[in-house]
Image: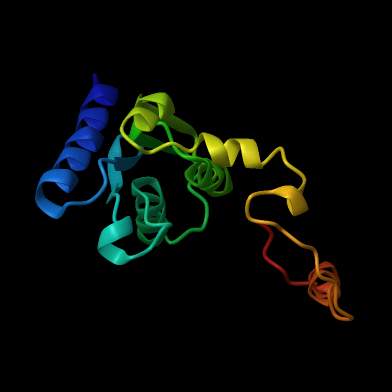
Amino acid sequence: MRDEKFMKMAVDVALDNVLRYSGGPFGAVIVKNGQIISVGSNQVTLKNDPTAHAEMQAIREACKALNSFQLTGCELYTSCEPCPMCFGAIYWARLEKVYYACTHEDAAKIGFDDQFIYEQLEVPPEKRTIPFIQLLTNNTYQPFTAWVNKPNKQQY
């Protein structure tokens, strides 16, 4: 029953975002030990920030609230199956579990189609619709070498 409560909240946030703020129809809630840590709504057009998806906003706020760059032990409730960017952020944040309502197919039906991004991941970098071109300089590997040799680095 608790899970449904948090999912309903994520969906209500998404609806409120559309009706009150003219934002995208997406909402997210992060919970730890049954307590709400953060709530996020899609703010892409409001902030002119293509990364301001509901899940990203919730992850950022949860990290601030918990004073940590990892969200181990936390669960994400989101009104829609996460896009590839949010999918990556979820794994980087080490969330324990993700619950979603609508699927990415449902989102595609209303104009939020991420399938092309999934497909681009399989294309060689230089042949993608936005070409990715490796450009090496004489200092290319210096940051990596410095990281490897740094004795007091904080792993993540």
